[in-house]
Image (tube, rainbow, N blue to C red):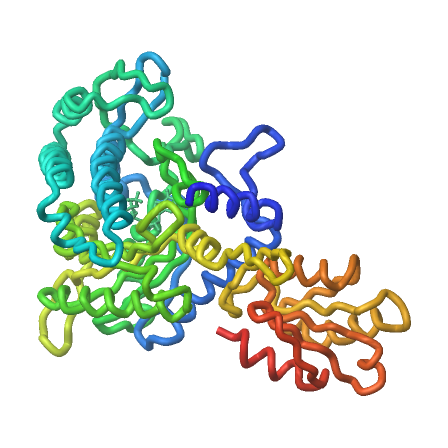
Length: 503
Ligand code: ATP
């Protein structure tokens, strides 16, 4: 699986989806750029989300708030004091790690051992293997399970109490080593704030210290009154936003899964106090349906309900997606109570309330948040659509089976040969289609090579222009997934494509 992931990362670079930032200067860690095909895929993902939110609901509107915000906002939201990761350094290798991640990886090792035992037994006993029984009775499985649970329990206690000394003690007791150098000469664990700081302006008193926003949500909260009043919004209603967020992540691995600059699509839904759990449940289901509607495979999603809740939340769940490196969070859905709005009332001194005409009373609304990372969704689409397909006769092709509405290029017009007026005819067809669909003309190399190139960037349709086209105005339409070809009239192309590739 690791190898598959490496291949996908290499493919993403080779075909203009994702590049390492500042590559000619040897790169900038955990920052990435999107190339000519990547930006199209990313824009399509954003459109798919934005339209579902703002067009399919009467009561959800969008905003686009600035990245820079008044620094007190981050005091009010709790980010200045609590948006920290516990950090530990290896004194020998000088490598820096998140203490919680080191311990989580240790827990995962016990899980791996258990799964290996189960896999071994399954292989040995074949059809007659009773897996549930084996898990409940095998001594090696039970022993590892016991150790795992003990470690997990100690870890949860330390994390819940924010007990840094205890986190360090666990690392020492379990003899956890630096995964890169193999040594274990650790410093103390200390808190590391994930927000990037910079300075704004310059006055006689000095410049103001500001942060790059670590989430887009606060831009919605501080505009709650503006939108509610000017949009005459009635509760329940939502505000959606897509935008960049910045976190100085310590453990920056797994390509675009965890970046220091990334993009979020967030929607905050404002409800009556006491109704929040009903709405939490509704959004939990609605969001999963939205994901599944893409058709990447229902079995690739699962919920991960949180036992440990952030101080402001009274329910939280993640939608996880099966990446090549395991099930991982793509979206978080949180019932944030009235924490954020109340804090902003307190810190700004402004009343942030809603007068509910049906109840004839005023209150600070409760909030359900749905928050999804654009880049993580991009990665989930890329990984699940990638296929290295064996063909008859020993040949193979790499194909990205993107859902057609997300594909960077919707169709490519390919003149069979570069003469006899075929390229001109291809341009004419492109001109007809380009106002509605991203449409390329490719005339270099053999037709087979050109099909492979389009498969590799996930183009759902290739339109081939041949000599017959000049006689009867028909072309072949090749379908990416089946490679089947059909003969269609040029005048029907727009209609056929519109049906298949619109959102
Ligand atoms: P994680 O536990 O993986 O650090 P999180 O729980 O801190 O994520 P949230 O604060 O809930 O994440 O942010 C909402 C969404 O933003 C996440 O579900 C994820 O898709 C995305 N996201 C968060 N941090 C990053 C990052 N460093 N790089 C890319 N996407 C991110």
